[in-house]
Length: 127
Image 1 (tube, rainbow, N blue to C red):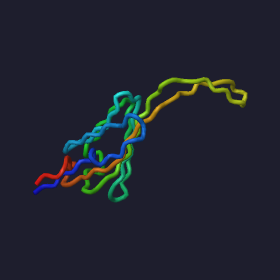
Image 2: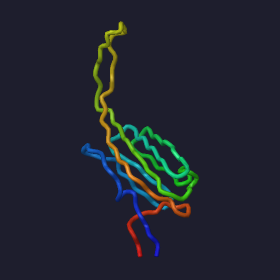
Image 3: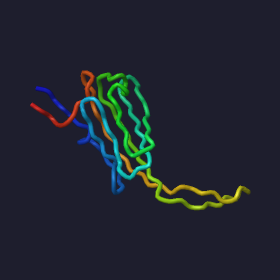
Image 4: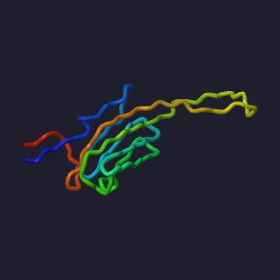
Protein backbone atom coordinates (compact mmCIF):
# COMPACT_ATOMS: atom_id res chain seq x y z
CA UNK A 1 0.00 0.00 0.00
CA UNK A 2 1.31 3.37 -0.97
CA UNK A 3 -0.14 6.46 0.58
CA UNK A 4 -0.37 9.41 -1.73
CA UNK A 5 -1.15 12.88 -0.50
CA UNK A 6 -1.70 16.21 -2.30
CA UNK A 7 -1.06 19.78 -1.24
CA UNK A 8 -3.86 21.02 -3.45
CA UNK A 9 -6.32 19.39 -1.07
CA UNK A 10 -4.65 21.10 1.86
CA UNK A 11 -4.56 24.66 0.53
CA UNK A 12 -5.81 27.62 2.43
CA UNK A 13 -6.88 30.10 -0.25
CA UNK A 14 -6.86 33.83 0.17
CA UNK A 15 -10.02 35.66 1.12
CA UNK A 16 -10.06 37.45 -2.24
CA UNK A 17 -12.26 36.35 -5.11
CA UNK A 18 -9.53 34.33 -6.86
CA UNK A 19 -6.68 32.30 -5.49
CA UNK A 20 -3.43 30.96 -6.81
CA UNK A 21 -3.91 27.54 -8.40
CA UNK A 22 -1.50 24.83 -7.24
CA UNK A 23 -0.91 21.53 -9.03
CA UNK A 24 1.60 18.83 -8.20
CA UNK A 25 3.12 15.97 -10.14
CA UNK A 26 5.73 13.54 -8.84
CA UNK A 27 8.61 15.81 -9.95
CA UNK A 28 7.31 19.41 -9.96
CA UNK A 29 4.87 21.80 -8.36
CA UNK A 30 3.15 24.50 -10.42
CA UNK A 31 1.67 27.75 -9.12
CA UNK A 32 -0.47 29.85 -11.47
CA UNK A 33 -2.87 32.77 -11.51
CA UNK A 34 -4.20 33.73 -14.96
CA UNK A 35 -4.41 37.49 -14.45
CA UNK A 36 -1.24 37.99 -12.39
CA UNK A 37 1.71 40.16 -13.36
CA UNK A 38 4.03 38.25 -11.03
CA UNK A 39 4.02 35.48 -8.49
CA UNK A 40 6.22 34.86 -5.44
CA UNK A 41 6.56 31.58 -3.55
CA UNK A 42 8.26 30.91 -0.23
CA UNK A 43 8.97 27.34 0.84
CA UNK A 44 10.22 26.09 4.21
CA UNK A 45 10.94 22.61 5.45
CA UNK A 46 13.28 20.14 7.18
CA UNK A 47 16.78 21.07 8.34
CA UNK A 48 15.91 24.81 8.42
CA UNK A 49 15.29 24.87 4.67
CA UNK A 50 13.94 28.21 3.43
CA UNK A 51 13.87 29.42 -0.15
CA UNK A 52 11.97 31.88 -2.32
CA UNK A 53 10.98 31.66 -5.97
CA UNK A 54 9.68 34.49 -8.17
CA UNK A 55 8.30 34.81 -11.68
CA UNK A 56 7.48 37.95 -13.64
CA UNK A 57 4.37 36.24 -14.96
CA UNK A 58 1.42 34.46 -13.40
CA UNK A 59 3.09 31.06 -13.73
CA UNK A 60 5.98 29.33 -11.99
CA UNK A 61 7.03 25.68 -12.05
CA UNK A 62 9.43 24.46 -9.39
CA UNK A 63 11.32 21.24 -10.03
CA UNK A 64 11.72 18.90 -7.07
CA UNK A 65 15.54 19.18 -7.18
CA UNK A 66 15.19 22.93 -6.45
CA UNK A 67 13.58 22.14 -3.09
CA UNK A 68 16.14 21.17 -0.46
CA UNK A 69 17.89 18.76 -2.84
CA UNK A 70 14.74 16.59 -2.77
CA UNK A 71 15.22 15.68 0.91
CA UNK A 72 12.36 13.75 2.47
CA UNK A 73 9.95 15.59 4.73
CA UNK A 74 6.97 17.90 4.97
CA UNK A 75 7.29 21.38 3.50
CA UNK A 76 5.14 24.50 3.86
CA UNK A 77 4.54 27.06 1.11
CA UNK A 78 3.04 30.52 0.75
CA UNK A 79 2.20 31.86 -2.70
CA UNK A 80 1.28 35.45 -3.57
CA UNK A 81 0.29 36.68 -7.01
CA UNK A 82 -0.04 40.39 -7.72
CA UNK A 83 -1.64 42.31 -10.58
CA UNK A 84 -1.36 45.99 -11.42
CA UNK A 85 -4.91 47.29 -11.93
CA UNK A 86 -4.16 50.99 -12.30
CA UNK A 87 -2.07 53.88 -11.10
CA UNK A 88 -2.60 57.13 -9.26
CA UNK A 89 -0.69 60.36 -8.78
CA UNK A 90 0.43 60.96 -5.21
CA UNK A 91 1.73 64.28 -3.95
CA UNK A 92 4.22 64.19 -1.13
CA UNK A 93 5.00 67.24 0.92
CA UNK A 94 8.73 66.68 0.48
CA UNK A 95 9.52 69.10 -2.33
CA UNK A 96 9.75 66.40 -4.99
CA UNK A 97 6.29 66.92 -6.48
CA UNK A 98 3.88 64.18 -7.40
CA UNK A 99 4.76 60.62 -8.30
CA UNK A 100 2.85 57.81 -9.96
CA UNK A 101 2.05 54.82 -7.72
CA UNK A 102 0.67 51.49 -8.90
CA UNK A 103 -2.61 50.16 -7.57
CA UNK A 104 -2.37 46.39 -7.18
CA UNK A 105 -4.51 43.46 -6.17
CA UNK A 106 -3.13 40.26 -4.72
CA UNK A 107 -4.25 36.66 -4.44
CA UNK A 108 -2.65 33.89 -2.49
CA UNK A 109 -2.55 30.32 -1.34
CA UNK A 110 -0.72 28.46 1.38
CA UNK A 111 -0.43 24.84 2.31
CA UNK A 112 1.99 21.99 2.56
CA UNK A 113 3.34 19.07 0.57
CA UNK A 114 5.56 16.08 1.24
CA UNK A 115 8.65 14.70 -0.45
CA UNK A 116 9.31 10.98 -0.05
CA UNK A 117 12.09 9.03 -1.80
CA UNK A 118 12.84 11.99 -4.08
CA UNK A 119 9.27 12.43 -5.30
CA UNK A 120 6.38 14.70 -4.43
CA UNK A 121 3.61 12.70 -2.82
CA UNK A 122 0.44 13.51 -4.76
CA UNK A 123 -3.31 12.96 -4.72
CA UNK A 124 -5.28 11.22 -2.00
CA UNK A 125 -4.71 7.88 -0.33
CA UNK A 126 -4.44 4.84 -2.58
CA UNK A 127 -4.67 1.41 -1.04
